[in-house]
Amino acid sequence: MTVEIVYCAGWDPVRRSIVDALPEAVARERDAVGDQYAFVLTGERPLVLVEVCWAAHHASVWYFDEQDRRHRQLEFRRWPDERLLLLNARQWAYEPANLEFNKDEPEWRRSSWRARYAPDGSRTISGHWAGPDLEVATDHPVPEFGEWAAVVGDLGPLTVRADPPAADPAAEPPWRPPMPLRPRQLDETFEGGARFELDDGADVTVELVSGGRLRLPSGRLIVADPDPWLHEVVPFEETVVPGEYPLQLSVVRFADSPEHTRVAACALWVSDRPTATWNNAWRDGEHPLLLGDGEFFGVGVDAGRVALVDVAVAADFAKTIEDAYDDMDGWAHELTGSFANLITVSSGWGDGAYPVWVGRDEGGALTCFVVDFLVLAAARRLA
Image 1: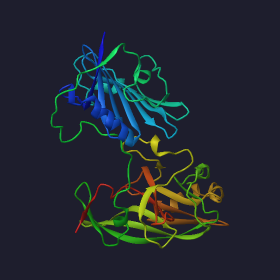
Image 2: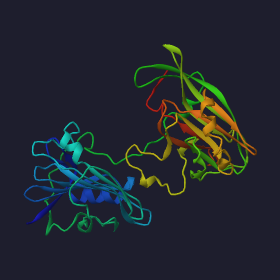
Image 3: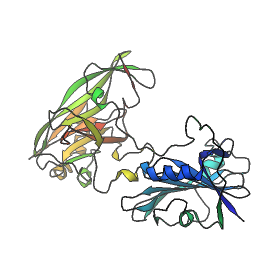
Protein backbone atom coordinates (compact mmCIF):
# COMPACT_ATOMS: atom_id res chain seq x y z
CA MET A 1 0.00 0.00 0.00
CA THR A 2 1.28 3.44 -0.89
CA VAL A 3 0.79 6.03 1.81
CA GLU A 4 0.55 9.73 1.07
CA ILE A 5 1.74 12.57 3.29
CA VAL A 6 -0.71 15.46 3.23
CA TYR A 7 0.56 18.59 4.96
CA CYS A 8 -2.20 20.71 6.45
CA ALA A 9 -3.39 22.95 9.27
CA GLY A 10 -5.01 20.01 11.06
CA TRP A 11 -7.93 17.61 11.20
CA ASP A 12 -11.68 18.24 11.52
CA PRO A 13 -13.05 15.44 13.75
CA VAL A 14 -16.68 16.31 12.94
CA ARG A 15 -16.34 16.13 9.16
CA ARG A 16 -13.48 13.62 9.57
CA SER A 17 -11.47 15.44 6.96
CA ILE A 18 -8.26 17.40 6.49
CA VAL A 19 -8.36 21.15 7.14
CA ASP A 20 -6.45 23.57 4.90
CA ALA A 21 -4.02 21.41 2.97
CA LEU A 22 -0.60 23.09 2.75
CA PRO A 23 2.19 23.04 0.17
CA GLU A 24 5.15 21.08 1.46
CA ALA A 25 7.33 24.20 1.32
CA VAL A 26 4.97 26.09 3.62
CA ALA A 27 4.92 23.24 6.13
CA ARG A 28 8.71 23.02 5.98
CA GLU A 29 9.01 26.73 6.69
CA ARG A 30 6.62 26.46 9.63
CA ASP A 31 8.63 23.57 11.02
CA ALA A 32 11.85 25.58 10.77
CA VAL A 33 10.53 28.63 12.62
CA GLY A 34 8.51 26.66 15.20
CA ASP A 35 5.02 27.55 13.96
CA GLN A 36 2.33 24.91 14.24
CA TYR A 37 1.30 22.67 11.37
CA ALA A 38 0.13 19.10 10.89
CA PHE A 39 0.24 16.25 8.41
CA VAL A 40 -1.88 13.19 7.76
CA LEU A 41 -0.56 9.86 6.55
CA THR A 42 -3.35 8.43 4.45
CA GLY A 43 -3.97 5.49 2.14
CA GLU A 44 -7.43 4.17 1.46
CA ARG A 45 -8.37 5.91 4.72
CA PRO A 46 -6.60 8.22 7.20
CA LEU A 47 -4.00 6.31 9.20
CA VAL A 48 -2.01 8.76 11.31
CA LEU A 49 -2.31 12.46 12.18
CA VAL A 50 0.78 14.28 13.46
CA GLU A 51 0.50 17.75 15.03
CA VAL A 52 3.74 19.73 15.46
CA CYS A 53 4.54 23.02 17.20
CA TRP A 54 8.21 23.31 18.08
CA ALA A 55 7.69 26.75 19.62
CA ALA A 56 5.73 24.92 22.31
CA HIS A 57 8.17 21.94 22.26
CA HIS A 58 5.19 19.79 21.33
CA ALA A 59 4.37 16.99 18.93
CA SER A 60 1.37 14.69 19.07
CA VAL A 61 0.75 11.50 17.08
CA TRP A 62 -2.84 10.32 16.62
CA TYR A 63 -3.86 6.95 15.15
CA PHE A 64 -7.21 6.41 13.45
CA ASP A 65 -9.48 3.39 13.63
CA GLU A 66 -11.40 2.04 10.64
CA GLN A 67 -14.17 4.61 11.14
CA ASP A 68 -11.73 7.53 11.03
CA ARG A 69 -11.98 8.08 14.78
CA ARG A 70 -8.83 8.94 16.69
CA HIS A 71 -8.38 6.08 19.14
CA ARG A 72 -4.77 6.36 20.25
CA GLN A 73 -2.48 9.29 21.05
CA LEU A 74 1.21 9.65 21.78
CA GLU A 75 2.12 13.08 23.14
CA PHE A 76 5.79 14.11 23.00
CA ARG A 77 7.97 16.95 24.26
CA ARG A 78 11.06 18.25 22.54
CA TRP A 79 13.66 18.24 25.30
CA PRO A 80 16.52 20.81 25.42
CA ASP A 81 19.07 18.11 24.47
CA GLU A 82 17.18 17.53 21.18
CA ARG A 83 15.47 14.34 22.31
CA LEU A 84 11.80 13.74 21.68
CA LEU A 85 10.45 12.27 24.92
CA LEU A 86 7.07 10.62 25.36
CA LEU A 87 4.93 12.41 27.95
CA ASN A 88 1.53 10.73 27.57
CA ALA A 89 0.09 7.69 25.84
CA ARG A 90 -3.69 7.38 25.62
CA GLN A 91 -5.94 4.78 24.08
CA TRP A 92 -9.70 4.46 23.67
CA ALA A 93 -11.92 1.61 22.51
CA TYR A 94 -15.22 2.43 20.83
CA GLU A 95 -18.36 0.55 20.03
CA PRO A 96 -19.26 0.80 16.30
CA ALA A 97 -21.87 3.51 16.88
CA ASN A 98 -19.80 5.57 19.34
CA LEU A 99 -18.76 9.10 18.49
CA GLU A 100 -15.14 10.09 18.99
CA PHE A 101 -14.34 11.06 22.61
CA ASN A 102 -18.01 11.15 23.66
CA LYS A 103 -17.73 11.11 27.44
CA ASP A 104 -21.46 10.54 27.81
CA GLU A 105 -21.15 7.04 26.38
CA PRO A 106 -20.35 4.50 29.14
CA GLU A 107 -18.33 2.29 26.79
CA TRP A 108 -15.96 5.21 26.17
CA ARG A 109 -15.49 5.91 29.86
CA ARG A 110 -14.89 2.27 30.73
CA SER A 111 -12.30 1.76 28.02
CA SER A 112 -10.19 4.91 28.31
CA TRP A 113 -6.58 4.33 29.33
CA ARG A 114 -3.63 6.63 29.98
CA ALA A 115 0.03 6.26 30.81
CA ARG A 116 2.02 9.25 32.05
CA TYR A 117 5.78 9.01 31.43
CA ALA A 118 8.70 10.52 33.32
CA PRO A 119 11.88 11.57 31.49
CA ASP A 120 13.56 8.31 32.57
CA GLY A 121 10.84 6.26 30.84
CA SER A 122 9.03 5.15 33.99
CA ARG A 123 5.27 5.51 33.85
CA THR A 124 2.09 5.84 35.90
CA ILE A 125 -1.04 4.19 34.51
CA SER A 126 -4.62 5.32 35.03
CA GLY A 127 -7.94 4.37 33.47
CA HIS A 128 -9.61 1.12 32.51
CA TRP A 129 -7.97 -0.11 29.34
CA ALA A 130 -8.22 -3.91 29.28
CA GLY A 131 -6.52 -4.55 25.95
CA PRO A 132 -2.87 -5.38 25.24
CA ASP A 133 -0.18 -3.20 26.75
CA LEU A 134 1.10 -0.30 24.69
CA GLU A 135 4.62 -1.07 23.52
CA VAL A 136 6.06 2.27 22.46
CA ALA A 137 9.51 3.81 22.40
CA THR A 138 9.70 6.68 24.88
CA ASP A 139 12.87 8.35 23.58
CA HIS A 140 13.63 9.42 19.99
CA PRO A 141 15.98 11.85 18.29
CA VAL A 142 14.00 14.89 17.12
CA PRO A 143 12.94 13.96 13.57
CA GLU A 144 14.09 15.96 10.60
CA PHE A 145 11.24 17.48 8.63
CA GLY A 146 9.26 14.69 6.96
CA GLU A 147 11.30 11.90 8.61
CA TRP A 148 8.80 10.59 11.16
CA ALA A 149 8.83 6.85 10.43
CA ALA A 150 10.81 6.01 13.58
CA VAL A 151 8.15 7.72 15.71
CA VAL A 152 4.88 6.78 13.99
CA GLY A 153 5.92 3.34 12.75
CA ASP A 154 6.78 1.98 9.34
CA LEU A 155 3.72 2.28 7.13
CA GLY A 156 5.46 1.39 3.88
CA PRO A 157 6.48 3.59 0.94
CA LEU A 158 5.57 7.25 1.40
CA THR A 159 4.81 9.89 -1.22
CA VAL A 160 3.97 13.56 -0.77
CA ARG A 161 0.63 14.57 -2.22
CA ALA A 162 0.91 17.19 -4.94
CA ASP A 163 0.79 20.75 -3.63
CA PRO A 164 -2.79 21.95 -3.26
CA PRO A 165 -4.02 25.14 -4.93
CA ALA A 166 -3.78 28.29 -2.87
CA ALA A 167 -6.74 28.80 -0.52
CA ASP A 168 -7.72 31.15 2.28
CA PRO A 169 -6.86 29.49 5.60
CA ALA A 170 -9.45 29.00 8.31
CA ALA A 171 -9.76 31.87 10.79
CA GLU A 172 -8.59 29.63 13.64
CA PRO A 173 -6.41 26.52 13.42
CA PRO A 174 -8.38 23.35 14.28
CA TRP A 175 -6.02 22.58 17.16
CA ARG A 176 -3.62 24.35 19.49
CA PRO A 177 -0.60 23.08 21.39
CA PRO A 178 -1.05 22.40 25.11
CA MET A 179 -0.61 25.42 27.35
CA PRO A 180 0.22 24.90 31.04
CA LEU A 181 -1.64 27.07 33.52
CA ARG A 182 -0.29 30.60 33.70
CA PRO A 183 -0.81 33.15 36.49
CA ARG A 184 -3.70 35.53 35.86
CA GLN A 185 -4.29 39.00 37.35
CA LEU A 186 -2.15 38.39 40.42
CA ASP A 187 -1.36 42.10 40.76
CA GLU A 188 -5.09 42.85 40.88
CA THR A 189 -5.60 40.03 43.38
CA PHE A 190 -3.51 42.03 45.85
CA GLU A 191 -5.16 45.37 45.15
CA GLY A 192 -7.34 46.35 48.07
CA GLY A 193 -10.83 47.38 47.00
CA ALA A 194 -10.60 45.68 43.59
CA ARG A 195 -13.95 44.27 42.49
CA PHE A 196 -14.47 41.11 40.46
CA GLU A 197 -17.30 39.12 38.99
CA LEU A 198 -16.69 35.40 39.57
CA ASP A 199 -17.49 32.86 36.87
CA ASP A 200 -20.78 32.08 38.63
CA GLY A 201 -21.80 35.77 38.52
CA ALA A 202 -21.04 36.61 42.15
CA ASP A 203 -19.72 40.12 42.86
CA VAL A 204 -16.76 40.19 45.28
CA THR A 205 -14.38 42.82 46.65
CA VAL A 206 -10.76 42.27 47.67
CA GLU A 207 -9.67 43.01 51.23
CA LEU A 208 -5.99 42.80 52.19
CA VAL A 209 -5.37 41.20 55.57
CA SER A 210 -2.18 40.43 57.49
CA GLY A 211 -1.50 36.74 57.97
CA GLY A 212 1.35 37.32 60.41
CA ARG A 213 5.09 37.07 59.88
CA LEU A 214 6.80 33.85 58.84
CA ARG A 215 10.28 33.13 60.11
CA LEU A 216 12.57 31.39 57.63
CA PRO A 217 15.84 30.48 59.41
CA SER A 218 17.26 28.73 56.32
CA GLY A 219 15.45 30.77 53.66
CA ARG A 220 13.98 27.60 52.06
CA LEU A 221 10.19 27.48 51.94
CA ILE A 222 7.82 24.51 52.11
CA VAL A 223 4.15 24.94 51.19
CA ALA A 224 2.17 21.79 51.92
CA ASP A 225 -0.91 20.23 53.43
CA PRO A 226 -0.62 20.70 57.23
CA ASP A 227 0.01 17.13 58.28
CA PRO A 228 2.72 15.36 60.30
CA TRP A 229 4.62 14.47 57.11
CA LEU A 230 4.94 17.96 55.70
CA HIS A 231 8.67 17.96 56.50
CA GLU A 232 9.06 15.32 53.76
CA VAL A 233 7.79 17.75 51.10
CA VAL A 234 10.50 19.11 48.80
CA PRO A 235 11.12 22.85 49.32
CA PHE A 236 11.09 25.29 46.44
CA GLU A 237 14.31 25.88 44.55
CA GLU A 238 13.94 29.63 44.97
CA THR A 239 15.53 30.72 48.24
CA VAL A 240 15.59 33.95 50.23
CA VAL A 241 17.91 35.51 52.77
CA PRO A 242 17.14 33.95 56.17
CA GLY A 243 14.84 36.22 58.12
CA GLU A 244 11.26 37.09 58.95
CA TYR A 245 8.79 38.02 56.21
CA PRO A 246 5.20 39.33 56.16
CA LEU A 247 2.41 37.09 54.94
CA GLN A 248 -0.48 38.94 53.30
CA LEU A 249 -3.88 37.48 52.50
CA SER A 250 -6.15 38.52 49.67
CA VAL A 251 -9.65 37.91 51.03
CA VAL A 252 -12.73 38.36 48.87
CA ARG A 253 -16.03 39.43 50.42
CA PHE A 254 -19.29 38.65 48.62
CA ALA A 255 -21.54 41.64 47.89
CA ASP A 256 -24.80 39.71 48.28
CA SER A 257 -23.68 38.05 51.51
CA PRO A 258 -21.12 40.22 53.34
CA GLU A 259 -20.43 37.61 56.01
CA HIS A 260 -19.27 35.22 53.26
CA THR A 261 -15.52 35.47 52.61
CA ARG A 262 -12.89 33.35 50.93
CA VAL A 263 -9.10 33.61 50.90
CA ALA A 264 -8.27 34.09 47.22
CA ALA A 265 -4.48 33.91 47.64
CA CYS A 266 -1.69 34.51 50.13
CA ALA A 267 1.60 36.25 49.41
CA LEU A 268 4.84 35.94 51.33
CA TRP A 269 6.55 39.23 50.53
CA VAL A 270 10.34 39.07 50.56
CA SER A 271 10.95 42.46 48.93
CA ASP A 272 9.17 45.81 48.66
CA ARG A 273 10.26 46.27 45.05
CA PRO A 274 7.49 46.21 42.40
CA THR A 275 6.82 42.82 40.82
CA ALA A 276 7.44 42.88 37.06
CA THR A 277 6.95 39.20 36.15
CA TRP A 278 5.24 36.11 37.50
CA ASN A 279 6.24 32.49 36.98
CA ASN A 280 6.02 29.07 38.57
CA ALA A 281 7.77 28.30 41.82
CA TRP A 282 9.77 25.18 41.03
CA ARG A 283 10.82 22.21 43.15
CA ASP A 284 13.53 19.72 42.32
CA GLY A 285 12.40 17.35 39.56
CA GLU A 286 9.79 19.72 38.14
CA HIS A 287 10.13 21.10 34.62
CA PRO A 288 7.73 23.12 32.45
CA LEU A 289 7.96 20.59 29.63
CA LEU A 290 6.38 17.96 31.87
CA LEU A 291 3.12 19.92 32.04
CA GLY A 292 0.09 19.33 29.85
CA ASP A 293 -2.72 21.66 28.89
CA GLY A 294 -3.94 23.64 31.90
CA GLU A 295 -1.66 21.69 34.24
CA PHE A 296 0.61 23.01 36.98
CA PHE A 297 2.87 21.71 39.72
CA GLY A 298 1.11 22.68 42.87
CA VAL A 299 0.16 21.93 46.42
CA GLY A 300 -2.37 19.22 47.19
CA VAL A 301 -4.85 20.12 49.93
CA ASP A 302 -7.23 17.77 51.72
CA ALA A 303 -7.54 19.58 55.04
CA GLY A 304 -8.96 22.86 53.72
CA ARG A 305 -5.73 24.69 54.59
CA VAL A 306 -2.13 25.03 53.45
CA ALA A 307 0.89 25.34 55.69
CA LEU A 308 3.92 27.56 55.09
CA VAL A 309 7.09 26.71 56.99
CA ASP A 310 10.87 26.69 56.66
CA VAL A 311 12.36 23.34 55.67
CA ALA A 312 14.83 23.49 58.56
CA VAL A 313 12.09 23.48 61.21
CA ALA A 314 9.24 21.60 59.49
CA ALA A 315 10.03 18.36 61.34
CA ASP A 316 9.64 20.18 64.68
CA PHE A 317 5.88 20.35 64.06
CA ALA A 318 5.41 16.67 63.15
CA LYS A 319 4.24 15.70 66.65
CA THR A 320 2.18 18.79 67.41
CA ILE A 321 0.36 19.72 64.22
CA GLU A 322 -2.40 17.08 64.48
CA ASP A 323 -3.29 18.24 68.00
CA ALA A 324 -3.62 21.78 66.64
CA TYR A 325 -6.21 20.96 63.95
CA ASP A 326 -9.18 21.96 66.08
CA ASP A 327 -7.64 25.39 66.65
CA MET A 328 -6.91 26.08 62.99
CA ASP A 329 -9.79 28.38 62.23
CA GLY A 330 -10.02 31.77 60.60
CA TRP A 331 -8.18 33.00 57.55
CA ALA A 332 -4.72 32.32 59.04
CA HIS A 333 -3.46 30.52 62.11
CA GLU A 334 0.06 30.48 63.58
CA LEU A 335 1.83 27.63 65.35
CA THR A 336 5.01 28.53 67.21
CA GLY A 337 8.03 26.34 67.78
CA SER A 338 11.38 26.63 69.50
CA PHE A 339 13.20 28.26 66.60
CA ALA A 340 10.54 29.39 64.12
CA ASN A 341 6.85 29.23 63.33
CA LEU A 342 4.37 27.65 60.93
CA ILE A 343 1.38 29.48 59.48
CA THR A 344 -1.67 27.76 58.01
CA VAL A 345 -4.03 29.57 55.65
CA SER A 346 -7.61 28.72 54.66
CA SER A 347 -7.47 27.46 51.06
CA GLY A 348 -10.04 29.31 48.98
CA TRP A 349 -12.84 26.90 48.08
CA GLY A 350 -11.28 24.14 50.20
CA ASP A 351 -9.61 20.91 49.16
CA GLY A 352 -7.93 20.56 45.77
CA ALA A 353 -4.63 21.42 44.14
CA TYR A 354 -3.28 24.96 43.93
CA PRO A 355 -0.32 26.54 42.13
CA VAL A 356 2.47 28.50 43.79
CA TRP A 357 3.91 31.41 41.82
CA VAL A 358 6.98 33.59 42.34
CA GLY A 359 7.17 37.26 41.51
CA ARG A 360 10.35 38.93 40.32
CA ASP A 361 11.36 42.54 39.85
CA GLU A 362 12.74 44.03 36.65
CA GLY A 363 16.21 42.78 37.55
CA GLY A 364 14.99 39.23 38.12
CA ALA A 365 15.27 39.32 41.92
CA LEU A 366 12.60 37.52 43.93
CA THR A 367 9.81 39.70 45.36
CA CYS A 368 7.31 37.17 46.71
CA PHE A 369 5.80 33.70 46.81
CA VAL A 370 2.07 33.52 46.08
CA VAL A 371 -0.17 30.54 46.86
CA ASP A 372 -3.03 31.03 44.41
CA PHE A 373 -6.31 29.39 45.43
CA LEU A 374 -7.70 30.14 41.95
CA VAL A 375 -10.73 32.01 43.29
CA LEU A 376 -10.04 34.91 40.92
CA ALA A 377 -8.29 33.03 38.12
CA ALA A 378 -11.36 33.06 35.88
CA ALA A 379 -12.97 36.19 37.32
CA ARG A 380 -13.74 39.39 35.43
CA ARG A 381 -12.38 42.65 36.81
CA LEU A 382 -15.13 45.21 37.42
CA ALA A 383 -14.71 48.96 37.13
